[in-house]
Amino acid sequence: MIYSSANEWRTAAQKRVLLFGMSGLGKTHVANLLRAAGGWFHYSVDYRIGTRYMGEHIVDNCKHEAMKNPFLRDLLMSDSIYIGSNITFNNLSPLSSYLGKPGNPNLGGLPFETYMIRQDQHRTGEIAALLDTAHFIERAEALYAYPNFVCDSGGSICEVVTPDDPQDPVLRALSDAVLMVWIAGSDDHTAELVRRFDRAPKPMYYQPAFLHAAWAEYLESFGQTPDQVNPDAFIRWAYARALAHRQPRYQAMARNWGITLAAHDVAKIRHTEDFDALVEQALKDRGLAAPAIHPK
Image (tube, rainbow, N blue to C red; front, side, top):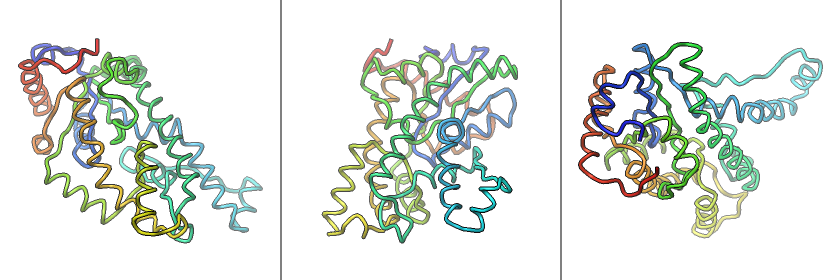
């Protein structure tokens, strides 16, 4: 880790962190708070994916849908209108809408093959966006003179790395540039995330093996063909399984590559000093135990 002790963190002239964990546990809240306080550059991995790496896919898909309407088609063909994605740090709907959900096309579902192509596009974009972290640290300092840097990673970071592999290229690159910080939720947090997702299910990225297994199990369990599947019903059904799938991967990332902050402590953060104190204590706690692997 780039800060090997609590004292190194406390006295560091430049603080650089990457926040990871399930969406909804406070990553963006902390990143926004640090940015608003001044002196912190906020790098959003999901925003980078949705603009630099999948922006063209998103816009082309919107154009494809618009071309089905004769009125809009004529305007697009004559360059009278343009279509763009208004993705922001706090509104990633264009990205999730493009990822889509598999199932009945009459309910907005995608063919499973198309869904998996878009999942693979996201995987490629997420790895590239994570590897851009060091570049943005340099950019933030050179262009804007920001001494501190927070990377707000997506919930699916654990799906594109191998946490127990000391040679994992993404985690090695990240650990050379930032302190990896897991925001870990309790069982109560998990239950609330499931309830929240059930109210408003949204597309996410999952590992291919997980998705293929989940899709096959769902079709068999409910006796449905792919075109009969309610897209929202499937992703609701898969979400709780995804949380269970991700939890040990997050734990391994924190154990081998970083530190852990409890989500209930993170929720109490109101100032940068609160965040600094939590990280300092976590580094003290980690210093009492040897890491499971030695990435360096």
